[in-house]
Length: 435
Image (cartoon, rainbow, N blue to C red; front, side, top):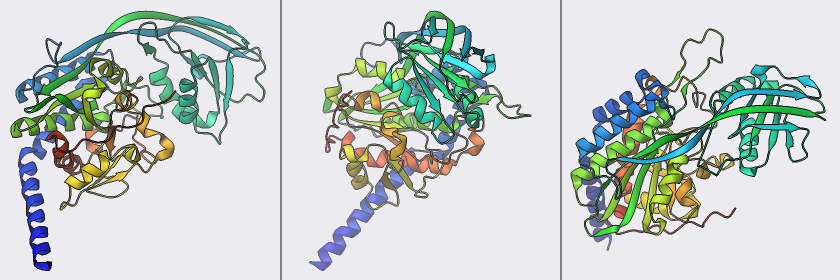
């Protein structure tokens, strides 16, 4: 019995080594470097939604899909999954608190259409005091979906400026589904008893597009496995520090790294050419302004046919668990992570549950759009979000990344996904989100 066990273990080790050797050849680090350098270069201008930069990024991704030999999704003429949204741009904003006008630089609005408030009873006033989490407070306000004024303590001035840079630049909504406006005001207000707000907004219907390609399944073509990342970022930011000259938020980690993984995995599986299930590789647009690309995508596929979604977000540096590791959001919601780890037996890489439950990461990335309807859709990441000082700043550049970490994580995803791709394993469905 002991001899048999040793032999079996040796064979398992040899098998894992063989797979690892294969994936090391098929996922080349120099190609990973080329892709991420291209996507995060200054000439992409930060890939903001509705800009020439994101158009340039889309063209690059399309060219990679074509070179790889992917087919467009059913119903699409090319790789673009086109849709439109209403873009609302603020024209003017006047705010006064307790009868005193607020200076222009200390206020902005996230609004889909013009509005006027005068101490309305249906407007909630929220004080973001120094002991609160500014990001958590405005996410809570958005989720609540009611008219709100957030009075933000000056302690958060730098973060207020960054948030203003992308939320205050305008709002984007599906036609007829605009969210209620939120007004942000920086300053100390002991007792805000009265307020007046007048906001004028210009609206336009503009085109957006995900970039998607498929490898049709050999024996289970009506069962889908999705590999995704978002290719948009924040674009050009106003300097928030004295003497700052760089204004391009390159988004190298967020999420050129994930998009690079999608392109690399497409090449890997196309070379293997043995997938039982249909593989969908999709670069989502507009994640940074509301996960709109993945929301649209979720309406274009039958969620009952999607057996798993590997969403890849920020894998540019080692995780808090060290090298050869990543975490999976919503690990406990299905056996997705357990299956992935089983497929990595005999390798050094390990997947962990999300170590940042207070950040609600499971519903903060593009996996959420499919997870909400029951798909085992999870995000794989290595980002130390609690201490990442480059997150959503101009410092998120290629030079800050660990390409070894990116490559090893992509290879681990390739190895760990193989039993799902082959049709052998099917993760359990996640509970649908209840509003």
